[in-house]
Structures are given as structure tokens and as C-alpha cells.
Length: 68
Image (cartoon, rainbow, N blue to C red; front, side, top):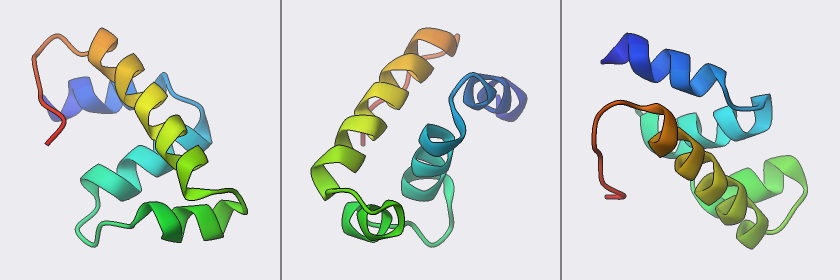
């Protein structure tokens, strides 16, 4: 499963991959606002990037998962 996730993440652009990793996969999960400050955009924009990335991942991964 980890290998499939790594392959799916590789399909994302670097920013999307970083946002998904920081929000969902990191031990010390980052907030939308923390990532917004890092990228110089709004928290809403980070949420949109994250949502699009998760949609792409769901289409790529062969197993089912939930949004939390």
C-alpha cells in the first residue's frame, strides 16, 4: 500500500504533493493557515489545492479511503 501511495503522490505536482503530505501524512500535521503562510496564499487556496490533489489521488489509488 505504501508503494502504491508513493506512486500516486508522484503523479501530483510538487506543491500539491507537499500540501497533502504535510496535512495528512506527516507526524506533525500542518494547518491550512501554516501552509498558506508558507506559500503566500490564502488558507482557502490551500484547501482548494488539497481538495484537487485528493481527488486525483482517489482516482489513482486502487483502494478506498475516506476524508477523515
